[in-house]
Length: 137
Length: 137
Image: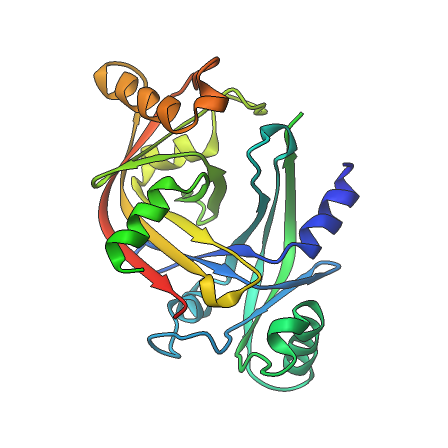
């Protein structure tokens, strides 16, 4: 795949991992659902059970907006591995057009899961500043 | 699954993601193969193509040994999701029994990929200090 095809594959991929940095130096690392359009990635806190709505990732972003997102394909055939790493500046969006647009993107990408019960949010929007891709062979 | 079964499933899982922190505040995030026994996780730089042997993750660990590893299962059936997040103190090991034992663990877990060409290393060993598990119920 060329880089454009790899980015398109990453945009279709159902899961990514979001890393954010805490003041303590600890890294928070969680799987996320996401939508990727152009140089913007959005993800949302959804209705899956959480211990609290006051999530570590949101606290971290408020302090340090530079985040890293990894989309990667694992397969037992190591000739078909790839990953796309996105760095960017995150903001938390809880209302307004930026919020509703992001929720709409997520519902469109995950109709089976979100069309009945859209994510409550808040939304995390990442303005991507750096893209690195890797693939085997 | 109870927590022990979840940890056992994570130990069998073929891929994880390793997050390390750079002095700049950037987070390096890469997929890794790994072996997990007790409270120790090992991973190694292998023979897959790298731009350089002087990898960012190794530089980061030398400066900041606190790392985060995420093992997670994605499935379109969101009732069967789980993740295990491991935090710990990493050291880079390039020789000696700690090195050869880690390589042996990796070859045992990935015989198809590593039995002919074991990872060259170096090895990253993580002494796990904190475990958090999550699963959809």
